[in-house]
Length: 154
Image (cartoon, rainbow, N blue to C red; front, side):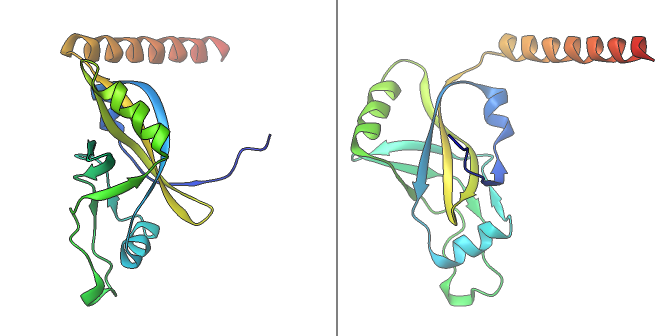
């Protein structure tokens, strides 16, 4: 099967640093026209955003979409809550997962796929400080090994 091409617009690198990502789900998002135009220009920030389930719907909060410069009166509030589009079975599964201790929904990246904006949503469990230190130590060790191998090959 051929993988579909998509263009990554924004990534939430802090999510992978602060959480263990257990599972990922692709979701659509409800946007206005000027928000889509702004996202195509890359003016999207996922850093402080999170998703929650309210009334059987998945809501994305804290995502910042800068106003479109030519949008004037049609621009919406940059930090407004936005509804994510998922199938009912997926929402029910997410409800079950988030009710377990320590799980939360975090957006990992936003991308354009077939002309539509999609959000990759992760079911995540928070990391403790020592977990973050372990990740940093492992990354440094791998970098040092790669550096030594490169020097040996010369």
